[in-house]
Image 1: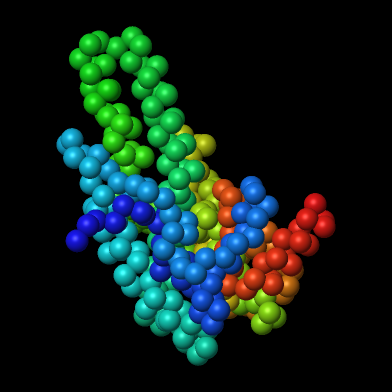
Image 2: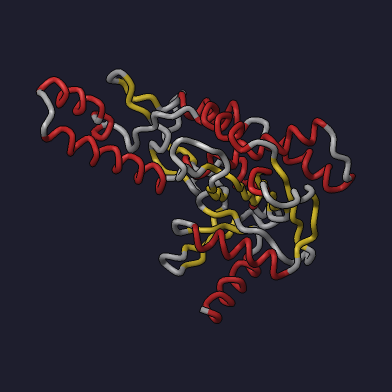
Length: 289
């Protein structure tokens, strides 16, 4: 059995929460082309060839990073989604529900790191930096630098990362989290899923020798078409009262704000369960632009 080489940079199990099962479609808007279209499957949406492939010890590895993602962030995704849905229905917060919330917080932490936009930026920054160093380097160091960037001839990205490890480190640095679960008050309104999966905002929440260090302090996750979860680090509220975690029914304005932010920060695309809502939303944005 061949190893899949088309890798999702937003987990397919997540995208499926925005798939219209009754119509057998998911509706997509490409803002760069100003184009609406639909797909009958999530297999190729928010994915690219070799996105998680590595070049290690002279060999191409298509599998290890995919396995890491699956084990820690994907195989239990549906189960945890169902627990959040149960929590919304019964309003009983227990350890099991708390664990599901923290699962999604960690998933959201790594979302940006998985995107082509982030990977390209990081790889180019490193390459250009070492290229400058190489100009005045010894022959030995030049060879070592060339070897470090051999991946460019074999795979798309460096991918020297362990998603589960970095998620735990950032999660720990955030401290206690305050969650808010937003549900559209109007049953005819829907959340979008953007091509970066989940939103992150960085702020100065810890003290370091370098006072300018910013870390993830906010996570925003459109979990399903009808559920949006936000997490704020308690460290954001050092000089004010810490708000309570809660479930809220979002007004049309609030749902629109989250969708607008995700559309604006997307690289090119957002997807939605409902064709009419997506098209009307984009039309209204154009009207007010």
